Image (cartoon, rainbow, N blue to C red):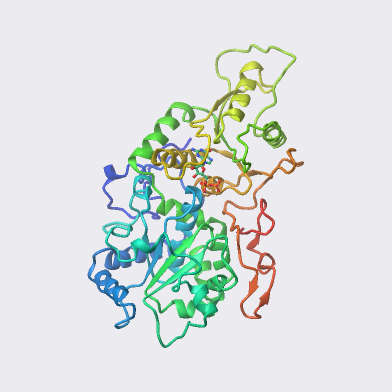
Length: 467
Ligand code: GDP
């Protein structure tokens, strides 16, 4: 297995020169990349880093642009423009939206600054050398983040409704509401015409819980640049995610201790991510049935032999480790017991492990999110991955790991769907709330049928993903 590859910069994706000890995970990837980042992407990242260094917190340019924020209007054309990502929603969602905001910043020559929220600093290392990506505590709009919504005067969608978007008076900041409940005017963000206006605004404040990159691929103004950056279109999150998201030493401890203890020394690692969107706690029999049906049918796990007590040799057996993640421990216990109580028909030895069972989502709790992040990362280190429909937690694991998962279809009416799962078309996450609008023709359209590389998702018929 490819433990600790010596290509510590991942083919040039990562910048050199960070202090190794401050973030042990950065240069110690357990897994190499799936495919090579394009030389153009690498050069754009280095260019971004230079821009970030010039414009980041407390630089001269930053201080100047912040002054304009206080006055509300532009004094002159600023040196630096920004996207401010506002902490919002569950951890999987946040990782996907940060990647989306970063790519948007790259495409529009902006600098991405991150609202640290309650726990971002404890979860992620600084990804850009020399200058922080976190918004400083004295950033003048910090106190507004919570209250920004579609009704705010600086909301782009509301400005469009009020027809207060004019090219003569450019505001110093605009709020972009790109959360799942956004409306038709908010969605005009994805039209080139609006990008021309937004281009002039120095501070774009963004709140989103969606991986909106698929819709950027449908915009003529970004199309060519995206092709240059990503000749292999289905690796956008894979490369951006591996560039941006490095667990802090605390989280890396969770990851590396678990990996060494349970996953490092086996022939194959299987990840199974169970996310049940049901208000009742579970476990549910139909979900367990579905897990077994999928893993057996797709030859991910071997069947058990109930008739024979095959007590083979105790040596040289092929071994598999199954890493399960779920808020509930019930599924894991059943799978583990099954492989303890019966031999496998193949003679393989199956170890089944689940790091935590937190019961319910506790987004405000620090250690809870650290464990969630460690588990997403651990899942990404597996060789074969099974994920649950609709879950951004699973998307993060598949994307970082460069894995096309088997997606368990969403159960309806408490029955295991048939077929239970299907292989994903690509490792890209799904955009759950895309616009269905043709900006040029100014009418509705099926945005999943416009180009071959942006399609409807396997797990959500109205979603969009890059393939
Ligand atoms: P999504 O709701 O599945 O799209 O994923 P999110 O990560 O955005 O939100 C779900 C949250 O629930 C996670 O961030 C965790 O806080 C928690 N959670 C869900 N599944 C698991 C799991 O398997 N392990 C742990 N530790 N936490 C989980």
